[in-house]
Amino acid sequence: MPHILLVEDDSDIMRINSNFLENEGYDVHCADSVQTASFMIEEFVPDLVLLDVMLPDGDGMDFCKILRQKTQASVIFLTACDENDSVIMGFRSGGDDYITKPYDLNVLKARIEAQLRRNTAKAPNHPRIELPFLTIDLFSGTASLDGEEYSLPQRELQILYLLASCIGSRISYHEIYKSIYGCDVDDSKNTIRVNISRLKKHLSMDDMSTYEIASTSEGEYVLRRVIF
Image 1 (cartoon, helix red, strand yellow):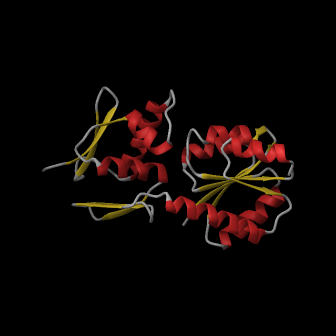
Image 2: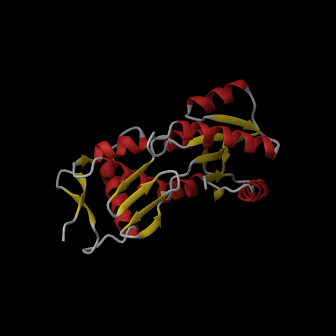
């Protein structure tokens, strides 16, 4: 189920869009401000963002630049302004599409589907890893460890997939962050540390797990099989 972050301060538009998209099979998370959206983007990674340009506490285009440091999810701007300069600014800030209000909900649906198809085309050629007692499936968003299946946030699933694809090898937090987000920032070490801590908690990794994620003082991580 694709995850959509809807950032919109008009409560009526938010309600109409979220109800429509949920009925179409999407998992919709709503935010009515830049501050709320910023908090939510740290909790989960959406597959697509519907982003209003004019928000009560900031500009959607400026927020899009921040999004691009954290996720490669598609961004579709929703705005009442259709001037050429505004459209150009939207694309230059990192947006993937631009829809002017008012719009037909079926047109919105078609634009979303088009962006998600592009995302699927850019997905890894082998989105599934199978190891003894550990399976990771990027398409379904799940991981199975020691016979238990877990639905993981996208960011954590991508980190686990990366570590499993290089099992037994050390990977620096710089490499992990750049692979997941497409760039590197000053706070990347702390971001990866927090996400790996959450990943281990979500997978219930403890002394009895058949796999562990170990770290070094240099900020490297390695997934390895535990031999009892």
